Length: 435
Ligand SMILES: [Zn+2]
Image (cartoon, rainbow, N blue to C red):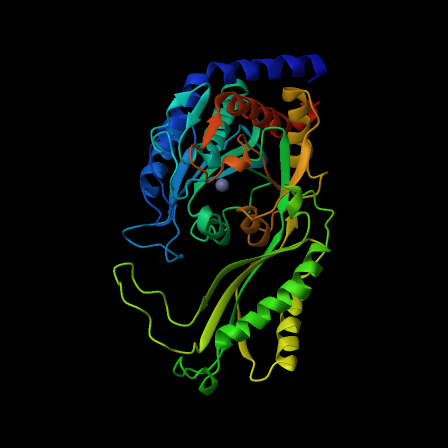
């Protein structure tokens, strides 16, 4: 295809996508109106059945896969996923769009119905519009328009709707990856709300651990007869403030993480519990007088591609040993809860180059390359699926995710559908005819 032919072909694709505007809106609304709250993981079967019916009508073969035995999976809340595949007329590469179907809790502060999918000023409002049912709908419209326009494409297109991303993705992408569902896949696009003119190459690493300090219980009027685990934990906190936090702030990365505050190592103290557990809300009495014999802290450390997991573990281990050497009776345990290695797809990977070129053509600007401060399902595709050619690209503003009055701009969905459709042209129309 020469340049003129390519421009004509892409214009035809764009017209098709524009003509599907009402379909795109209705599809997004339908998806938002199925409340797939996670936890606990509601209505996964319903949304997967809906997607299967939709995609089968457009020539896909689709199957439902239950992440049986994965965290949270039960007969009441089964972890269903849908995987749909459309073959081209000739063998070739496989482009896979993966979206998570779950949404987080609603929370307070809404002025619109969270599951009403109301349209106002060119936006659709509701929980999951931005994160990420709008992206899922845009990828479906892109694929359907592409298939209608280029009936002779080579290779295959896959669309998956997967469970549990918001709680780690174990019953979703991790399960599919373990079952070998990504083995034949060449390119993955995850339409998370990273903004229509940005390409997300990967994410920082994660290390969660629980530190427990031990003491000895005694009567609170005679604390000298016991040993206060909370004071021991106080010493850990002081050491963190004094040495660890400044050290983390000094570690900068070349990863283009957004927002910029996350372009360094960070650590959140996720929770801190010491002494008696808090009573139920309906208990109105006082606590008893006891010296706490245990304090537990959960830390959430996010690390950089320049750091190793051993280094991250080692600095906390060294800190605890330092406190131990300086403090009498200091006893502790540390338990690692989970970890994810940082990942970053190369800028010259085929899917990155293709989406970058498509953004340039649709939006008339050079894309911004970003890295996510937190992880998403790319971690499983990378680690279990062993596939490096993966990005997150989709409509919506990341800042709106998980917030009240979450919305997606209809115009952004259309634009990103064009970018995705154009990338399919680049990746799946016969090599010889590529521009
Ligand atoms: Zn998401």
